[in-house]
Image 1 (cartoon, rainbow, N blue to C red):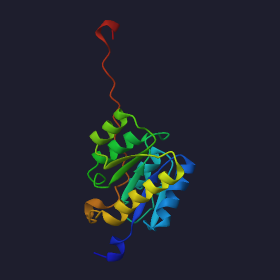
Image 2: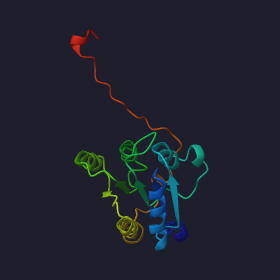
Image 3: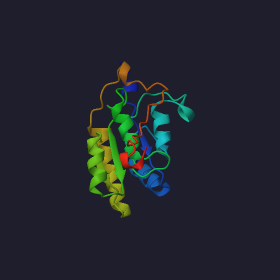
Image 4: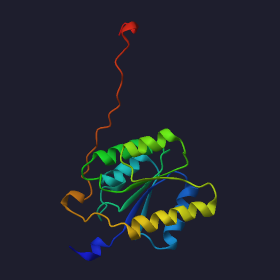
Length: 176
């Protein structure tokens, strides 16, 4: 195994708030915790990145060592993205940390039910936010040992996972 490839630490940041993007990049950059941080602004871009399609069709370098995932994003929310990642055999080994402003118990419970590795509530105060992101970066990029790359850990092929939207059957009283 080429140790140069093994030491590349890329992080995928899924965040639609420009201020939160700026603060997160500053916190990660201060300690040089990743070789590269790719920023995507909505849930479909997260999947395009991971499945090497759309604007990311030609990307190389394997999967990120970490996905920092906002829950409240346009097009496809973070919970739906989490479900797809954790249901895919090639992607489920990627650690996913939800960074959310939501303290709602149902959000927290549902994220853990679908395999999130950590759930962090975004602190409102600037210095606390930066400190929280630094701690996340230090653990996931410096302390945690990522799974070794294997043939299964290559970037997922450009395929579209099926998103199932369950529709309940019509109520018998409705005549349907």
